[in-house]
Image (cartoon, rainbow, N blue to C red):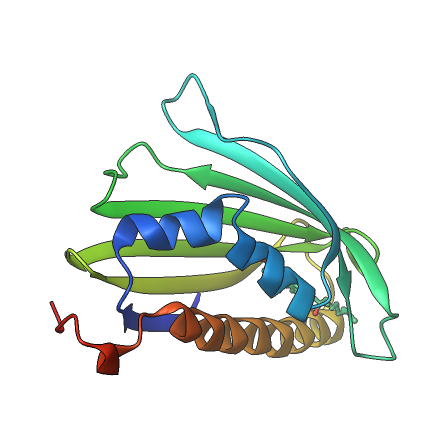
Length: 177
Ligand code: YK8
């Protein structure tokens, strides 16, 4: 896997979870910026295992002319039962892009860790892996991997920038706790 984001934010752990993993105005706005449309979310639901699950459906806009302009996508998220509200959250998210070339060969797995540091600070880490459902030949595999990394890198770079915008203004007082 690759580490795409590893940063401390002046945002509490539970606020970070809310921003990223509920139907928040932040994520709605971020999807708008990324030209992700037709989004629908299910509510978090507890499974027999004790983990929580939810799924998202949306249409992504792709800038690569070789691939096409749009693809529908499904994202299945698992909030692990080891998570501790306000302290530690672990979410795995599998993203399936249904309308890109070779879509039946791969999906993307994003692992999000949110860890409380202080009352008003948390660390967010995101690991990403491209997973293969069946083995394509080498050339196709490197094509998929290369196109995936660049798209994912761009997405998380912008997510980091938008999350920084959500931090309170440190020059307005309020200290640095
Ligand atoms: C989620 C990974 C690959 C995919 C794309 C596929 C190209 C296929 C190459 C062919 C378009 C929001 C990406 C980037 C689409 C966007 C996905 C997002 C950013 C020619 C072989 C969508 C996180 C996420 C994960 C995986 C990303 C796709 O929250 O290159």
